[in-house]
Length: 260
Image 1: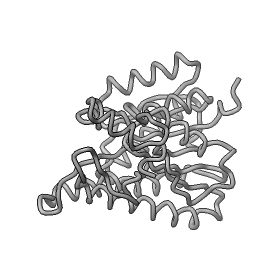
Image 2 (image 1 turned 180 degrees about the vertical axis):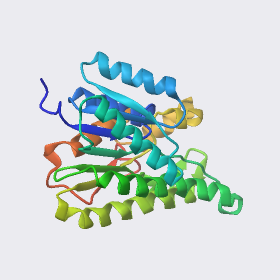
Image 3 (image 1 turned 90 degrees about the horizontal axis):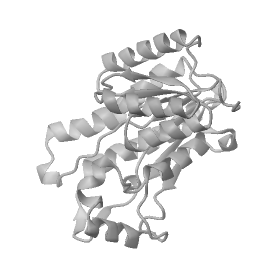
């Protein structure tokens, strides 16, 4: 039996893409995984089925994290589900993965688009973490999803891609990660972020799954290939492990060396 069988991980946006790969990787390592999703129950159930086929366990919870009420709803469901499985309301790992990426030139960025980026990518992460803290003890991990775009610009074969509101939201995640690492250190809670480059997900499918997109990304990485959700999940799994006990407040570049 895996040594992590008793540990519980909550992955927001855990039904698809990087979130799904992360949920499956943590389950493979023996974690009891709570798969959060907003609306795609079918995808969440498919992820959960695969977790169980691999010999681990967990459950799915639905919530819209764009409001405090939605965050409360998620944690009510988390507590209820853990009790149903004979577990106390303790979280060992929180992966703040749920997010959205929309882009537009500054002159075309509406207030709604801007608010959408910060509501889900920053506000939801902040208040999800706040609510999780009462359920976390010494040795717990908080892992935030950032982006390499928080520190560099995005270029394709056709030139610069204007996505400044999203990039600014992810830069806010970097700042939260550093501040929380210091603030929560006295409780023994370790906080880090992972910054993927462009990854082959449904969100990027419209351009990255084209011949031009594939060629551009292969040329942009010294490793000569396109990143996969499993590549990011592996880094997250390390940050969830005991091997990361001396790593906190860091934003780990998981871009395959994107545009070094």
